[in-house]
Image (cartoon, rainbow over all chains, first blue to last red; front, side, top):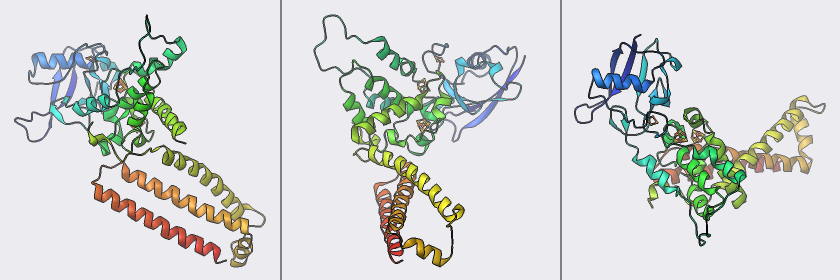
Length: 235
Length: 117
Ligand code: SF4
Ligand code: SF4
Ligand code: FES
């Protein structure tokens, strides 16, 4: 079987603008993942092709890219899930500076992640054994804890496209994950951080983030819980 | 911490909440308005019919509330749309100033018109 990949290429050292290059790849199967095809192109057709990947199993979040116009993980999409008889188009995640080909600069994404203090903050002395949490309370965090920081959500958010200062869905999801953790002792601190005009209030429940998330996390619901907590606190 | 990610401080929760509450109120009042103006037995669009209705102070109050809430909802929504864009400080202050001026001017005009009946 044969498949044609049209890939956006850009090398800042030699190119003035990005361009598309087509690769006709033979000997593939519809059960191949997009990442497998990329590996074949890089291995035997164009060694300069640049993309990130690490685990190749949807765990590390490295290979987020725009596949046929949607943000997805290359390692989690099979050719048969795409309209592969037509040309398959790959582009870097939108709205982030491109470092090379399919690799974008995620510094801003991580900076926002850091801003929401994505860790448990405790102020009291630790108990003898461990800080316990009930099953019910832990369950409230399971979905948000599935995030692998692939940036597919934040880079699909129209609010972030127009205002780069917006914290974005991934950082807000992380804020939920720790604010609603019963073991955390600084939820107010984190709520203060997200409660700014460029913080949570730029989310207009457009739902792009949910469609993009490879882990099928209902990000908007989690953001709405933070909004509710803020309204209850302020009004 | 970088100031880059901080828009104006001060909670955005009250205005977010008010925008929703005024939206619901406007929806209900707008339905009432349509029923009263177009589908009610006493509906009438003549000057006399409007004048007669406007003699009722409660009806006047309702109209003033409608004007104020409508302006708040519309202008605050417009501001929210502008806030989606990253702007230099002077531009956002100018836009905010214009919206406030428009709000005060139209509220004054609307209330004066209602009270003149
Ligand atoms: S729901 Fe909020 S965070 Fe998600 S894409 Fe829409 S505006 Fe962005
Ligand atoms: S919420 Fe989903 S899309 Fe966003 S970074 Fe986490 S895993 Fe990726
Ligand atoms: S390579 Fe790790 S998630 Fe795809």
